[in-house]
Image (cartoon, rainbow, N blue to C red; front, top):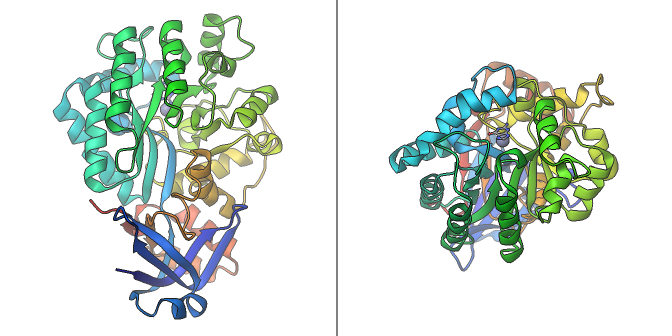
Length: 428
Ligand code: GUN
Ligand code: ZN
């Protein structure tokens, strides 16, 4: 059954520029797999005559927008948002590892996975590249919950066989056996995808890194996710452990862990040669501004990434990050872009921020034309936004003279209240 939604409509063209129809129409219909896809989108006047058979839902005053794509988040860190610490390494030791050790328990894993998906959807995030923990139970719980809800979601078992405390440290050979069986069990099942997940170079032995690289070559359409160059103490540690590598990022290249669908969180302390390596290998950075500001890590250099065309997109990095809300992440990205003491400061246009958290993020994940946009062919994961959700939002969005002003009002003032409804392509 064909369905149509009449409201304002935000989507992006192939160059990532915004396309906005004040009076728009989004038409969706199920494909052979029963997944709702966009079949037509544009102005109501142009699109409606082509779909006289569609059942129309009229949503006056609302904006239809693509579901947000979060390029890096840790579902098991849901409960440690806002844990203060002098920096990344003590934060990992004092909060993160103790919290993650609880995911050996399948019941705890299931409970937190459900809270996590409720929170993502309330905030309008419909796809995320997600860290689980080193426990197989955490991965199963995540995928079972995502599958029940019909979501397009990616995760993987964390690999960390050294420099990690009891409770989260895994065993080299078993960790790789577990990874391969989880790939076979979950990758490409319904809308689920597997990510090979070495935590970061300091917590994996050479043997584990090599094994991860071999699996990444054998299963070429899986994702790879890790962290790199987030914090100065971390960079120093990684350089001591791998003195022969040209750079910290190059450690991953040496193990075959840079390719399309590889995503590295942070990428703050990298140089132009690293950026070129990212561009050439189609490896993306997951820029995590609320986390970087909260943990005092540093400032991602958007200007340098753009100049070299190194792929990137936005991410919450909960629980180092402080919010599930893409509006908070986009605002923090704007602040980080503005910072001009450690790099050139710039003012990122609001539509660009929005693109980097939707279609641009999807493109960086190798999911261009699948999610993150509302062009024909895309899976119909979309949001109904209410730009009058709060008194100030109502005033500011009404006063806006341009699309950029309106998007900026939502980025600066928005949160989960703006997301009236999250519609999933394949409701479970
Ligand atoms: N580096 C290694 N592990 C982590 C993590 O869990 N969070 C962040 N922000 N950085 C990391
Ligand atoms: Zn992270």
